[in-house]
Length: 82
Image (cartoon, rainbow, N blue to C red; front, side, top):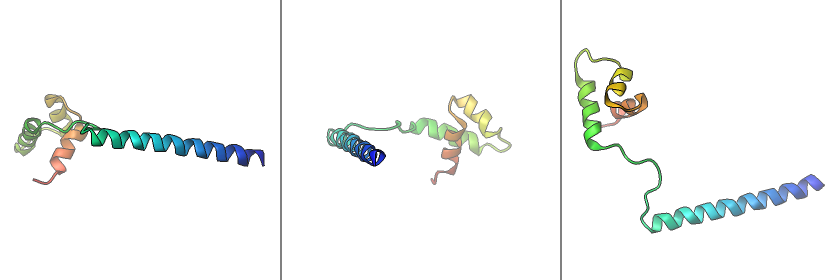
């Protein structure tokens, strides 16, 4: 019985936190603030595409190290349409 009451208080508190976070995100969006990771610069994406287009190119990790990005960034550019 006591754990149920404590659980309901915890659930209520979690709902209050979630509501405050969502309100803050909505306020930031309304103010035009960008949330999240910044987009990849188009020039860098083009350099990655050029490095991937070379015949007999090195591996993705080597290209990533040369350009100073993560291997996942190189893979994302490689898999992206266009």
